[in-house]
Image (cartoon, rainbow, N blue to C red; front, side, top):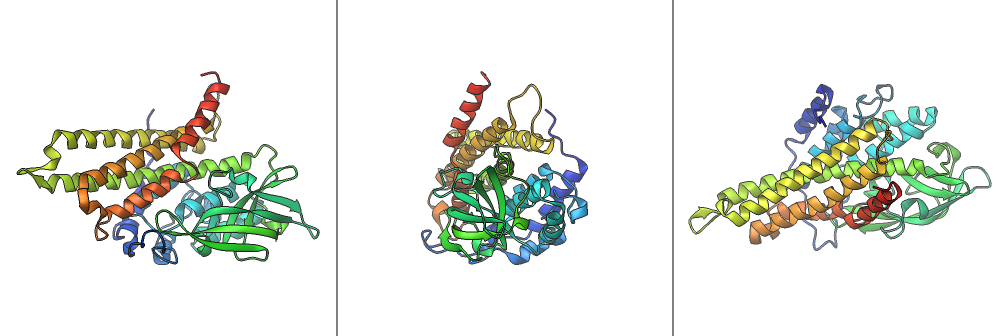
Length: 383
């Protein structure tokens, strides 16, 4: 498989590197106190506007909607660069929501929202976790026809990243005839936004719906009896998360390599010790495995998903999530081990990378959940 990027995709990656070049890890915000308080109460708005001016927020949106006209691979390349500095911006959530609106939304909805998203003026999140974080998101909220039209929502969604900063949140809901995708105002009538703090110290939110009415114009595409609309959004979140894991992992491996080459014990850099070299080599193998499974899944999404004589796209997505979750966990843990006590020093950035790694590892579910999903697919296809 040739994973050579096109000139346009390489240009997107270079533009992202330029934007993030002077961004300190995690935006230089102070560290949280044992996860009780968030690192900040908002996203990095200044960085978000710089991304908009560089046409990177809507890199995968059509040019007619103010986007860059590229594909999901280019979007993942931008996410990879963002993760290297732990950029505090919702590129994953807003990007996935925007691509869903582009794929399923009515023409008037696309024309109204996508240029605003690409310009950085409209923040759109996604509710991906269900009520507990272990429940399918498209089963956590029910939608019933509202008397005046539209839909009335009941249920809840937990762990919605940066919910308080979002203008709209894309919520999957179970209707009488299938799955709907609805754009909901997190501060609207009938919606309670409960403050949460994520594993990595960022603000999140629980959205509780008690008869919240969503007008028909905010429905993204038709009802899908087979839930394919939400599976498409979930697939985007999976490859986007895998891209973040890869970028974070690369940054941590580089940080650990530099430290191990300078830290001396018994008169020699610890990088020269066989045990350190073997652990570092294992983590390099993790990175390469994370990379190949990510680009395989992203390529299939960009190519339209289903191809003949192959396992379904969901198998490649599950594989990418398994390798990214296990890989980023192992990379962060090994880095802490090789750094010793300095890895827990709040003045050294590794502890923030470790917290982000744990957040990404568990995003949408741990590796074990996707191993079960992959096993089911292999059983169905008798492989």
